[in-house]
Amino acid sequence: MIELAYQPWFLLSLCGLLLLGMGLVVLLFALQVRELRRRDQARETAIESLQNLLRARAPAPARGPDEHQLRLARQFDELRARQERLELQAMEAHGYHQAIDWVRRGADVDQLVRKLGLSRGEAELLQALHRAREAG
Image (tube, rainbow, N blue to C red; front, side, top):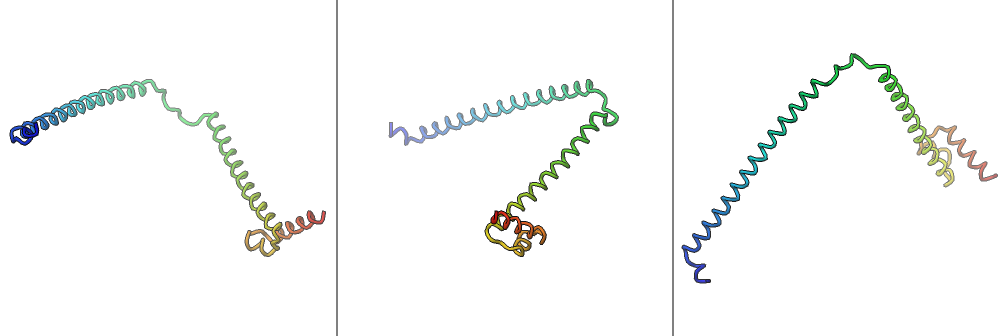
């Protein structure tokens, strides 16, 4: 069998069979691609006809927002404003918590003003409250 593998006619026959097999694979692949394209075209046609059917049955567009839509828009604006207020309060509360933490660690009024951006009155008030808690 090993001697047969070195014969030129055997090698050529083997190469020919491989090429034939590859040709069949390419042919099958091309047939599948053509079938997929046919199915895709059929789906596109079906989608287009459904879109036309929907357009034909759709009601005429409204001329303007009705009372319900206007009420929803007002409620949405009110909720957005409330959320912005709550976020601002949360940011301020976080800043005061941080300032209280600094006061507990021994920060003075000038440090609170400089590092945390508090007004002098806010910093002095926090200092006074902290001293009152320590004394009480």
